[in-house]
Length: 426
Image 1 (cartoon, helix red, strand yellow):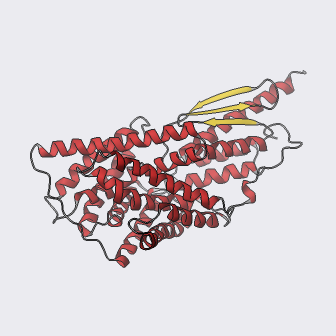
Image 2: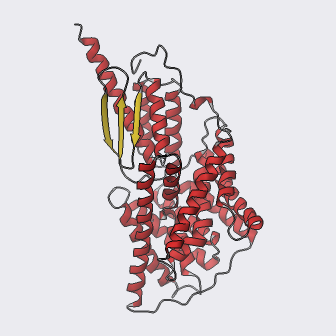
Image 3: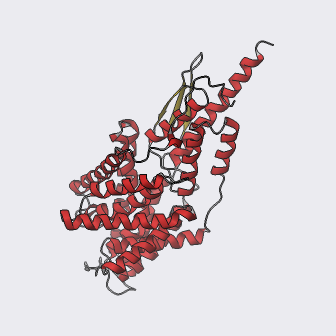
């Protein structure tokens, strides 16, 4: 009879560790950087009376239980590439904070995690496809395109959405979808030059495939390097580079195939939209982005505001600093806004920061580096690719400097004391 309590405690610990690994997997898939995943899992374990060391890579999560004897090590495989779902990300972050605050026991947390991860799409697929097209058109205008570039980008964006959602069921074709989107999108963009009046197919193509461009992957990788998560950061940056290369290979293949039966179209100068019209287009693009990222309905106005803020601060920094402005300054302002937003009840900074960064990335990377990569001229220029990483590092440093202000101090994120804590699940 003396072994029954020990067996029960072992089962409690098994359930707790299994839940911690599942939480790490879910946070990883919600685009939380590795250091954020480790911190939140560690806090959750402490709230349940366990001292756990956590280590995550892009495909691996490891937990070591250091409390009690003997120590145990558990390993879980992770899918490499996450995907956007702001509604799920917000729910997961709030769940981890509730656990850290001691408000949920293991069974309750398990039930809530399963509820969050259960598939319940916010919009039908055809609405998401159209949203991809609308956001692609907005980005085409964002990088200097006019009406016809927007029309072509809308068509290419719908195609990119079809490819993206068609490959979500298989985690092994994420790199291939970058190639497919670039290859088929380039062919479609070139074909549209024979249907539509003169337009710049490069800007249209970049707008259409922009949500498959790994700008956020590179930014998160740089953030992990800054936070000394070197192993995770290097693998994420390497993966981002592979995504860029797959885009380049797809473009090269499409251009080669096209020239077999027709010459490439002559370069065309795009007519940029007036500032007020562009602001309206970007706002509509923000609405579409909230659909693409599966945001909560109550967060949609804030997402539109974040997109406009990111665009506005970059335009202002351009007037002050020249050329493309300052990624660091723009990210700093965005980070401050996100932290202030996170002080509201049941709100998280990522709701503003993620869409804002997706707006900044085309503004900086798109017009300077990615347009060179997508065009035939300078596609292999290492200086341009290096510029992508410099921009990503500036974006990360801007967010780091914003976080140093301490604006987001929130009692929900404070781990509780473990003195006198009972066994897991109590």
